[in-house]
Image (cartoon, rainbow, N blue to C red; front, top):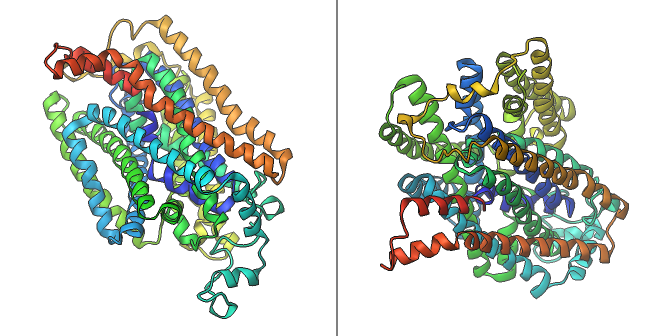
Length: 599
């Protein structure tokens, strides 16, 4: 479930865009910068099991601890996170569908949500969990197909290395001749920075084959901050934590993060680097819209490649889209309808509201994606912007679950102040750097980086100082008592799940391993690659080997581990369907869902 809902359209498309832009550093920083949040969210998942096992949404926890003012504030940030994630799904999906099929992008923006709406409204959270396994297995199947095509069947790492070297060694005149209608300078359509040709700005030796990339590092920092927002402020991740057993939550987030790393890293190291190595006529605008993977797949495999990318993208859109739809429906049902409209709402009433919300949200998102496209905002732009909008809510939410002194008033002030300061820094920085504020200038790495940094760190500093001066000194033992169950429904809550010793052990387990893996990915690995400078052919071959091994290893784990762990339950269900037993009872069904959730 974790791997599936974290595999956005951006995971498949934007990761290859940054490979097209920055070379080998792009896939690494995308993967590492978006993996650590899942690893560290496991800490919050166990904290939730310890102090608020009855919660349905994280905003309920905010309300139970900090009251309605904070509740309304973080409810707004939660909706912003859902809107941003869903917008990126539709922007990337619509652009790719248009490029591969010719369908009008605006029409695709309206049609794509209907696939999400239909099966989510019909199946709900349980269907999402089970379908997520199938979606993830298909995504990994396409992933290893693409890796095999680039580095084993069509080319080798040495050939890609030589091609990448040739790409950056072309003079401007040679680039003009390459990107022309008849091979002459006179008919060229080449524009500097529009096509991948010539030295890479701000990269060591102007090469794609180095981790020493100033722009790549800037993207990495923006990516880390933005994805903290889209994990910690996204109800869909809290929903998975709420639904999982404590042991599943800790190990599931850790294993899920490690497996997910392979998707952007391995896919972009193959398709993303191949796009520049083969010098396909992809413009920077097309790359920013997420069209690198479909362009390379079509070049290598023709219509079959286009079909595979469309299938892969559809799996990502439906899986993540359903998780976002259910997240929004939960927030509206529990945090608006039950909290402010009908406090005595029954489970049936809440379910009815949630299904209505799923349909309405899907239709609104189709309209929003058309608006964003009309404004000239593509997938890459929105991806860099997301941390500016929701980054200020991250540290207050972490403090809410882990720090007894964390103040509710301080959290509200920090969240809104961080957002205002981030937007001001972003816009003023753009005016200073470029002389005028335009969509393109606002999308530059430097101003996006400044806005993201101010969002998360100003908010954290404000909340820390306020909480030290006016501490809440909250007793976490009382938190769960303030959360109201629906019709006293305690399904899924057992004494074993609430065992303090087991929870303490799970918390210690995830904290230790989560922080170790985080440091390895964002500190140790990059530092070890610095002495290499521009990669040698052997070093690049080793880098590619890691990406291939990680991709194949993750595919094996994500495909077969859930089946092995659920073999008893699956056997019982199959026997029941074949009339050889009554295995498909509620208990077995529930246990199977929990095992699948770990994936």
